[in-house]
Image (cartoon, rainbow, N blue to C red):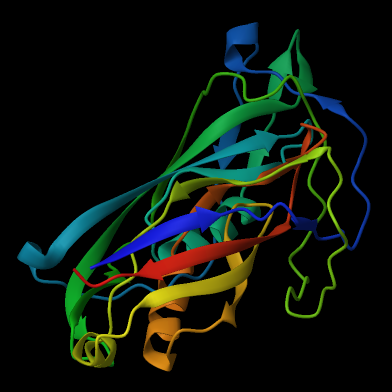
Length: 269
């Protein structure tokens, strides 16, 4: 058994965007009396398998908050509900590729908050990891079903996050954060597992991992900065890769990437 504590270091560092953000934008919600946006789904190739035993098939559900701008493009995506597995990356790519008929107020297009809901069927399978433990893995059975739903206002004003699709977080040297940037908030923090070797040798302690929480709240470029033992370091990295966050906010307006440190504590009882 192990315990994990999330440590957002006082010495937090913010990554600079490769390109500048737009100015402040007023964003509406359906409760403002506007006509809601409509989804125009992207047609992207997805990895779909042909068959799955009925007893192994299940439905996964995600929800993403986003702003649909007055031209029907999505901005400032962040998870409201996550699977905690690799499908989250696919869901984000699909959401970013979608286009929308924008919301309107008095017949004029306006930016609006919405939640993008994805329901998709997967085949649940058990495979063995490097320690021989059985772990769950999932394969897509059918393309996700996407729907929009209104959400209460997330913020009256936003700045659209700068594009980061080409950012290599392993090569960015982040500056120090100012007081205007609020740290990310953990939404999902799955527990790390002991390795068989560490349990047998009764190795325990604290592993420190740094990672970048990107503007969508996803972990990027995790690195061990204080090691315990090789197999436990690997387990710590596997765990933090499944973390999900509400992203850091700059000036209360714009989601930004940020560097944090996570302490993963392994204790035998």
